[in-house]
Image (tube, rainbow, N blue to C red):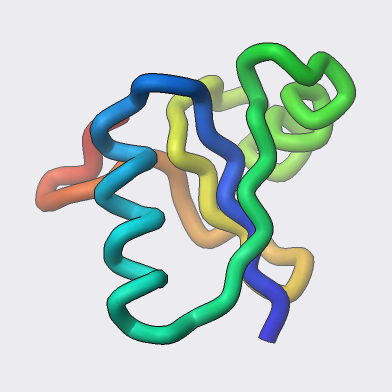
Length: 73
């Protein structure tokens, strides 16, 4: 499985997502979608223009944006 999380610095929901996957032992790639314009464009393409972070992409497929119940970000 390939897991990518698009985040922004200082986002508590992004940190919760990182903590969740780390605790579960699931490897992921973390991209900064705030300061890296190319990664932001990539994230927006996956999310259909939704700027909410964290944006989760699994095996090249958009899984969702935000974190928690209900998702926030």
